[in-house]
Image 1: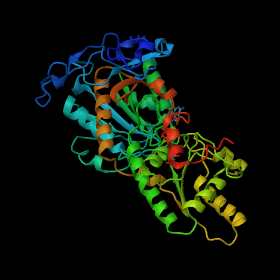
Image 2: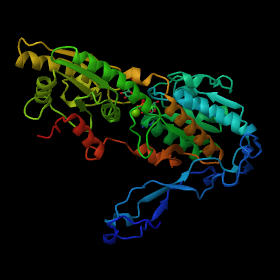
Image 3: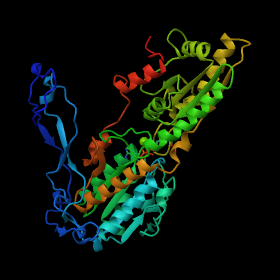
Image 4: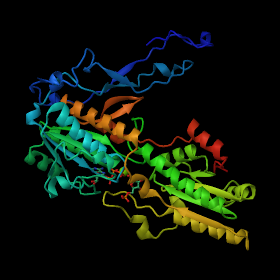
Length: 463
Ligand SMILES: Nc1ncnc2c1ncn2[C@@H]1O[C@H](COP(=O)(O)OP(=O)(O)OP(=O)(O)O)[C@@H](O)[C@H]1O
Ligand SMILES: O=P(O)(O)OC[C@H]1O[C@](O)(CO)[C@@H](O)[C@@H]1O
Ligand SMILES: [Mg+2]
């Protein structure tokens, strides 16, 4: 890679950017089934596509994970520059469409856009490749072995992108590897599309490994779903923007309530089990927020630099304040019984106590203690399920469509054990195990968090 347009102060820096790129290996069915036949894609004869030159992608089309470099450091020459295969249609595919039996499953919590992804998997398979055997697995992983699948055709999915939730239903827990892979074998599925979050992806890796071990001619693709936006490598997860947009309404309501009362505090709890992306993005776009509390930045209530001191000043200054708290923030401060400490959901995720309810009562306790007789109100709004149980907005709907079509093209091309997702704005195939190991947390040392602090002027809670 060379740089021709040099920056104004370039004389101090190298004018050639040399980057060692390592192509990330993507599993392919031929890794363990070397004699699989290829077929020309039906897109070749599809009047609506009439593929022009350059339409198809090949194994050599890649995307670089990293696009930002500092010319003054030697870091650019490090060997950790990953390139991923680009997502998109290939001319040669590894399935005959009439022999495809595809299964689609949704697992974990809801997220705006789930139904769009399902719809577009069906549309992509049906319209672009002529696949007719498509099945929905009911209610998450357990549905593979505990209920009959639902046959889906392209007419059925017509309006699904206009509905929140998942038509297939979802659940937590119920991951039984052998029962799932036995069911895949017994029912003759040769393409499996798995839509879910971090837990689902860890399960998908196990399913893929077991399919590989049994040398089954079954492609496995995953589409990462997480309203919390906590999956790494990809630019963002689908539904996240819709959730942030929806969160604005709750913040606006909290602001109105707070403004309309003497010493009014509007408190909004948003989703974010271990990451505060929704809270951060909603804060930055709303500008009504006085303090944003996220799991990545511990906070405290009492004393110098604490939340109460800050709110005291804000109330004196403005007469009201809005606090946004991500559900995973402050968990260590909430008193809990031994039983509560052990509590887990069906998937083994720790069950959180309600930070909103706790914070509301702590705020009241503080005010009564320090400002006896003065009027004070806390209005607590909990829109957590409302922001994820809605239909995806236009941007997310389009995004879901591209994700689903990317997954279909990838599987048809024989890739397996991969996730489809955008990296730096371009769609890529990323090995599932790599995605399952990464986590996208808010970096409290980067510009976005500094921006939150400068917008709210909230304390850093480090004193
Ligand atoms: N380590 C794991 N190995 C195998 N399966 C797992 C693992 N972790 C979770 N699962 C399974 O994946 C499914 C979904 O997991 P989970 O409930 O944690 O949701 P998730 O995919 O992380 O989505 P969310 O974003 O809602 O948390 C469940 O069926 C669960 O049993
Ligand atoms: O109540 P449920 O459905 O288990 O899901 C709640 C969790 O799911 C998430 O939305 C992640 O999908 C988290 O933000 C939240 O903690
Ligand atoms: Mg999860």
